[in-house]
Length: 220
Image (cartoon, rainbow, N blue to C red; front, side):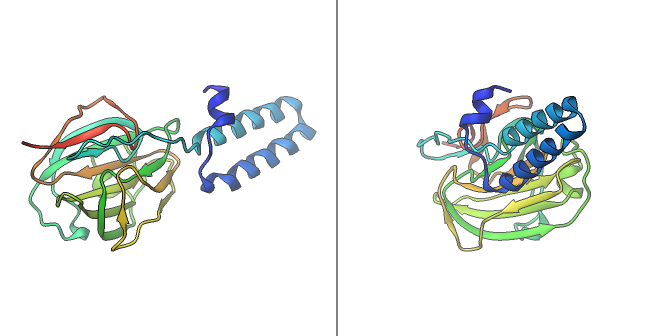
């Protein structure tokens, strides 16, 4: 954790109340024990770091999708899209990205287009890196038609520690590629289901930068 990352990078509005709470607790701990107070300040710095919301340089290349989140690709497989979105049961390529508590947790739209479906599904809080997390954990599902006509879906998936998913999207809303749309608190996973005519360009273990890393391209 760099000091400049904590001090200079803006934080997401969702983090303001947590920073205030952490700082207030730290201030109180100093009256009990100076070492505890310093531990509290370190945790306050971590809270600032967790909610950081850096600017990103979004690729302008036509026909590509960008990662919806920071993190590490934990799976590239085939799976049917979420039934709640009404996209049929034919398997699609699904790219899964695991976010640790040290990753930026602000989510970004993978492509420009129109939001055509939303569904929130209650569920468990299993380890977000587990394969079954995509079907069993609490999740927010999003369907969209890209500006190039592709019907894709992506999901914010809660994890072992994450207990709240924020999604600011609305059906019928038009969004740009790499646009901020939500946040998952604290540690989680995102999935993206590709359409035919799109090919994954990432591998398991690869590090993602939300809004910047190209994860799929239109096939020739």
